[in-house]
Length: 103
Image 1 (cartoon, rainbow, N blue to C red):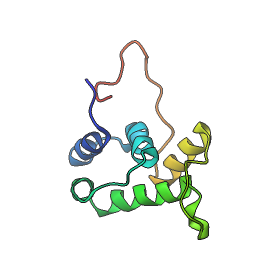
Image 2: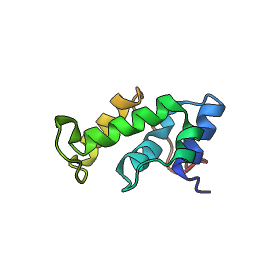
Image 3: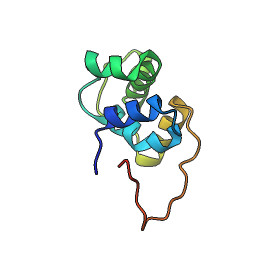
Image 4: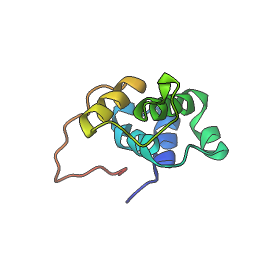
């Protein structure tokens, strides 16, 4: 069962689940072409919305006063940025045969 990233983050926040399991959702929200809309921002809360906005800026190299562009980071760099921006621990290792119920 696939859960859209905003829904997944909202659920994890509501039930205070381990944020380190949200790395893929944060990556999706950081790399998608459009920023969060007002409804999404309200559901995520101000702290998470600002973290996503900051990660989007950093991933596009727009913190230097230049115009935002396409994502400039490779996958390991992006994952490191997401861990830092959202204060996530290393992603836990899972048995791939079990799968992630919230993916």
